[in-house]
Amino acid sequence: MQEFPSDSQARREILDIGRRMYEKDYIAANDGNISCRVAPNEIWATPTGVSKGFMDENQLVKLRLDGTVMHTGDLGVSSEIKMHIRVYKENPSVGGVTHAHPPICTSFAIAGIGLDKAIYPEALMNLGTVPCVHYETPGTQGIPDSIAPYCNDYNAVLLANHGALSWGKSLMEAYFRLESMEHYAMILMYTGNIIGKANVLSCDQVQELLEMRDRAGIVSGGVPPCCAPKPTNLYDSVDPPVQVGCPCAGKGICSESAREDAQSKPDQKEIERITREVIASLGISQH
Ligand SMILES: [Zn+2]
Image (cartoon, rainbow, N blue to C red):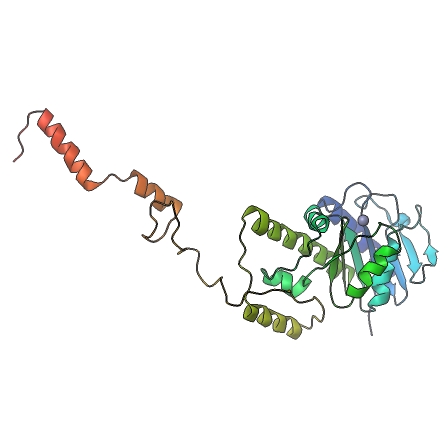
């Protein structure tokens, strides 16, 4: 039997997570929304028209999953609550939902690229792959319909040209998944567009993580569509492949200090030649 937080616990946690989302720049102005299930058919949620970083409990709204408002609060219900309700209806094990516009996740959503590269065990275990669902106008019925197919097999989605949506057994789990998404998106951005290289995990490595995930009792999260046929990450970067253009290439470690040494240490023969010249110019004979 599922346990639910009390009304007051849920309200406090919504306020707390709103502040965290705002402080982390996941939302600007009045963006985003947060909800928490307190009974099989009842949720508390953030209202419309307020910064989620500066809410008080009197502004929160309580609804039944059929849309009936049980407690209006000072500000009224957000049009985006429909997508929260849809997640709870599709997946009865969900206890909390968060929605925000974290800049890197939203950039992937604008590019129409899901977060599904097998490069990072934490992301694969606790978050899973994150599909990017097609664009629908914010606040319309199109969004709940677009996410419905993913509510049971995944833990989060990107909404095309819009932002991020995550859910979990508790509101805190949903929020941590939102954090993981933005972190994972940042790593994908660095490896894809800034560093320009990513070692994709091998199929055996992915399989091992999926089995660990099963054993940990995590039943959702999707499977990355691609894995490397052979591992490409089984070398220590202290002994990298020979680098073109590095003065000590082929001689072992190509660290910054080794490079400086190679450049600054004069050749022994050169020292002897200069010494001979100096001695000769001074007219001293060498014995
Ligand atoms: Zn939004």
